[in-house]
Amino acid sequence: MASALRPTLRTALRGTATQSFSRSFAAAAAKPQVFSIYRYDPERAAKPFMQDYTIDLKQCGPMILDALIKIKDEVDSTLSFRRSCREGICGSCAMNINGKNGLACLLYIEPGAAPIEIQPLPHSYVVKDLVPDLTNFYNQYKSIEPWLKRKDTKKPGDKEYYQSREDRAKLDGMYECILCASCMTSCPSYWWNPEYYLGPAVLLQAYRWVADSRDQYTEERLAWVNDTMKLYRCHGIMNCTNCCPKGLDPAKAIVHLKEQVAESHNDGWKYMMTGEIAKNKGRESGMMYM
Image (cartoon, rainbow, N blue to C red; front, side, top):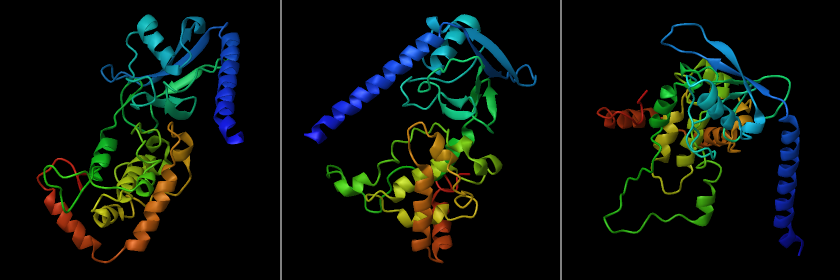
């Protein structure tokens, strides 16, 4: 009986919390809110600056993204930022809001006397305003070959590769990553060595395929990340886990990846990698595409 009531209780608690926030937001929204937004236009070759915009919250939705859209539509059409799904699925609107990385579509406006400060993802090259250049991040993601790799492939018409429920459960907490780069750009190790260290999101995805029971390139994947810079720049400060908008734990995946490397390592890995690299010479992505 008690277990049957728990979902109802959780739903009631969520509803109460939402109603409480709505009341406090409505009360604070009586005053205009100032947003201080990072501006940079490379075509003007001027230094970046912070520009203030004042918004009537009674005429705006409750999320940070709602405020940005209102500013662009009604106040300053030159403001640039990325957005797409508005549901926390695409990861496009990742930015730094009041000093913490997150998704603008999932973060509520918290009205107050101090301006709400919005900047692009930290330590990234800026294309314009709140739009970061994620080319390096995507190239690093390509380098781990994030797809199922088999040494014995199916014939046309064969059934799908079997995976038990227990093995499938091992992928929970990893496949949900939306590649927003919030964790990558919150990591000091990635700030200092972005060209070498693969970063939390990429290492999380690397372990996702190492842990997949259907994949037959586990050893090759481990050999690829077994590098002083690619993997071992992680010092476990947990910034990545703290800011992940999906509630994932990249730091935990990196620990498991290091454990599996330690358990499986052998001296033949470097020769194995030489062979894998040779296979990819004519490709635009894949292992050693960095």
